[in-house]
Length: 138
Image (cartoon, rainbow, N blue to C red; front, side, top):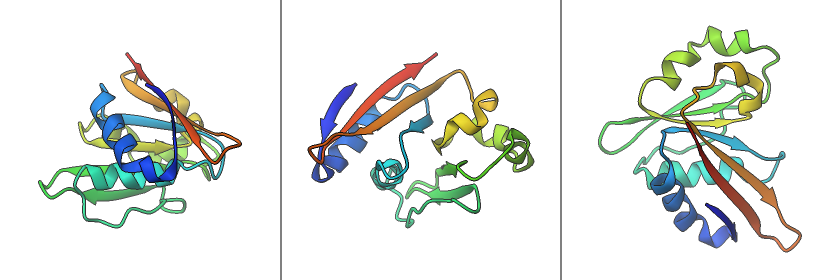
């Protein structure tokens, strides 16, 4: 999947991400302010969670629940300095839990990421559009 989208198309983009992902571990790449958290919030909504999604910048992980009782984990590794900090919160248990794991700044924990994951790269265009590229890793 490789597409340009505007903010008003976010619900459709989130649905397409969920449908196209061959893994529940989604790795979000993009510059600061490009819209990673905004897209994640919409994905959480489309997965039928009524929880208010927000960036877990200081807690490293937020947990949301769907109407079916499933769990969604949202990680933000921007502020960590060493992978050991992620290991300390038991990140591997989350990654292999078969729950949705939505990960911002995955490059900070590169050696801990499952091989079976989905890379989502968001870039900003000069015309207020974003480009999203989704690649299934196996």
